[in-house]
Image (cartoon, rainbow, N blue to C red):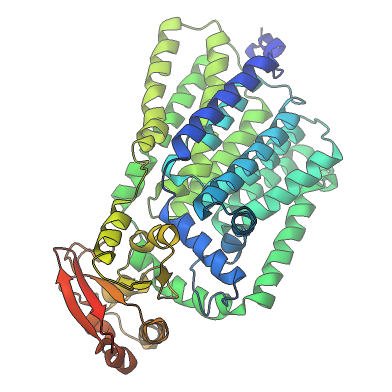
Length: 510
């Protein structure tokens, strides 16, 4: 008997109470873990930028971000909630993310209850875990938002592959959310591309009668047009500068990229072992798992395309690997195969789960040591309401600025252009483009320090500065003082303290 047919009676999302209870339990665990913890620095910066833009700052001119504008716009709801409710920025953002997850899981439930594949209840619970607990310190990162918004569309693709009809309202809402989600970062457009090509091959010309790709395409076209209309500076300056120097500044080593990917690789190996076991029972891989596998592979490709080895980049692929492996494990344990082998695979599965989920929970913190340090130093001086931190690390300034209400005296999240330029010059590269980017950075910092006049400036001095690996003796002040405006303004600052990592400068009161 075909194994997939043998298990068909277990396909429905039943028992509903068990599934609902499991998801509610996962929600409670997630809220208990996430609510008291500090948001990641990337989300804090994008929230800060969204707040500044809503308040009137011109994006990509008065405040500059490497990502296209949707990465900022997607944070507007949290700002509106903060302004309307009086909640902190962090609390408002967490609430909006939980609302988005709730919406995604409700839509996913409505889709999966119509689809016949085994074991759908385990896959659904695994997806809930992947959205709520797996992200840990990356909760609210753009990649987390992408899988939250894109999941209903992926599951509609699952339904389409099984020739299941989905209600019009589900298609429209899921298509809109996916259109927004996949536009946040172009690397993950590979996911809908892979699924659409598969559905075209499986459904033939019938694939053109589906509504969701047109909705996503329309949103994508409108978004691309809006960038040219409303934020042309992003195309004209930021993209050109970023594409030239960004990878040199923030790129990761091949070893680090591989190390971060290892738990996902181990999960893939275990999924392969489960498949091999099931093949002995004449198990035929249904289109459902093919769709999920293609979406997972595209998500992993998005991780490698960025080649930084950052855990948040792996979230879309890791979430789907987790769901696939959990689903195949559920089928395997209902099969007639060897119990000992099942238990070995299940035990081995604990390692990547720990690596992806539980281990990352230990990095959650209720406070930021960096923010604590800066706050302690700032309290030594009176009348400080504006600061500048000269480093190439975003996490030095954020969440500090959002949590303290201090003013940030820069249009940049950090001086991330600088290490890339220094590495390129160290390698002997020269040219007009390097000079242009360096001049732009120096002039921008000089204009900002003249405009905002921060009372305290922290300057990173350690030889072990993050992103400056291999660069000896770099000095921010010496470098930027080559700009006359910066040098003139810097004459108002006196070094008042120093430690192993920082020089601290105080602006004279005259």
